[in-house]
Amino acid sequence: MPHKTQATLALWVGAAGVGLIAVLLAKAAEWAFAGFALLQHRWWWWPFISLPLGGILIRWVMTRIGQGAEGSGIPQTMAALQVADDPGKTSKLIGARIAIAKFVGIVMGIGCGFVLGREGPTVQIGASLMYACRRFAPIADPAFRRQLILAGGAAGIAAAFNTPLAGIVFAFEELARSVEERTSGKLIGAVILSGVVSLAFLGNYTYFGRIHVPQFTYSILIPLLPISIAAGLIGGLFSWLCVHQTRWLPSTLLDWRIRHPYFFVAACGLLIALCGLGAPIFGSGAEATSHAVSTGEPLPWLFLPLKFIGLVATFLTGLPGGIFAPALSLGAGLGSWFVPLFGMELHVKLVAIGMTAMLAAVTRAPLTSAVIMIEMTDGHEMVISTLAAAMVASTVARVFKTRLYHEIAERSLAQFASPRLENSAPPDEPSDKKPEYQQP
Image (cartoon, rainbow, N blue to C red; front, side, top):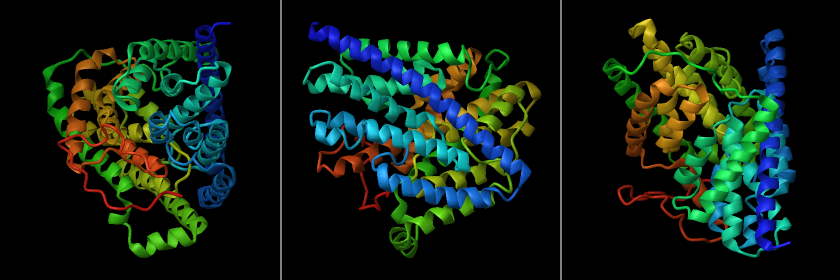
C-alpha cells in the first residue's frame, strides 16, 4: 500500500477515534457530575468530603501514572507541535498513557466537584490519539507528525462542543499560527470525520441549546461595551493569576505547596466547597449556564466571584482540567449582573455576550470564542454583537500582558531547553516574566 494512502487511512482512523473518545468522555463526565449532584442534594456537606479526599486521590494517581496530564492540555499540545521533530520529547507531552490519565483525571475531578471542564483536555486527548496513529503510516516526517497533532487537537475541540467550524478556527488561531495547504485539507477532513462520529452517538445537538433573540439593533451596544470591558479585565486577571503565581501567592504558601502537595490540594478542595455554599459553582457550570442561556434568567449575584475563586483554586492544584466551559460560565455570571438593568428582550443576549467576551479574554482567541459561541447556541442572529464583544474583551485583556496557553506552553518546552514558542509574545507585549513556580 502506498505511503500516502497509509497516511490518509491513519488520519481517518484517528479522527474517528477522537470523535468516539470525545463522546465517551462527555458521557462519563455527565454521569460523574450527576452522581456528585445527587449526593450533594442529599447531604449538603458532601463537597467538604469529596473535594479534599478526591483531590488527594487524583493527585496520587497523577503522580504515579499521569505525569504530563496535568492542567488543561492545550499548552502541552501547542508545545508538542514545536518538538514534533523529536519523538522522544513529543512522547512526554502527548501519548496513550497521558490520554488515559487525562481521561481518568477529568472524570474523577468532575465527579468530586472541582471547577473544571472536559473540553480543553479533549484537545490533548485528541492530539495524543491521532499522534499514536502515526504507527500505521511508516512516514518519518516531522511535518506529518505535526499534521496529526494539529488535526487531532482540532478534532478534539470540535467533537467536544459539536462545533466543527470552531475546531478549525481554533487550530488556525491558537494551535498553529500558520498552516500549509496540505495541512488545512487534513485538518478539515479530521474535523468532519470526528464530528460525524460524535453526531452518530449524540445527535445534532447544541451545547447550550438554541437561543431565540431579536435581530441586531444598535441598542445592544449600550450594554455590550461595559460587559466586554469588564470581561476583558476579569478574564485577563484570571490568566495573570494563573501564569504569575509567585507574584501574588505568599512565599510561605508556595513553599508549603512544594513540601506538602497533598495537603495543599485538600486545602484548595475545602476552599471550593466553602464557595459552593453560596452559589452552584461545582463542575464546569454547563448546567447552570445552559439554563441562563435558554431562559434569560440571571444567575445569582455571587456566582461570578465564587466561581472565579473556585476556578483559580482548581487551577492551583495542578489537577487535570480545562477552563473553556468554566470561563463561559463566568461570562454568564457577568452578563447576569446586567440583566436587571435592561428589558426582557435583551436578557439572553446579555448572558451570551458575557460568555463570549469572557472566553475571549481568558484565551485571547477572539475568533474562536465568537465562532464557538455561535455554534454552541445556534445564535446566528448574534453574529455581529458576538464578534464585537470578543474583539473588545480580547483587546482589553492585553493590559495584563499575559497569554495563558502560550506561556504555559513555553514552560512545557523549557524542560527540553527549547527556544521560545513562536508568536507567544507579540512585539507590543514585551515579556516581563520572572522564574515561576512550576505546576506539579
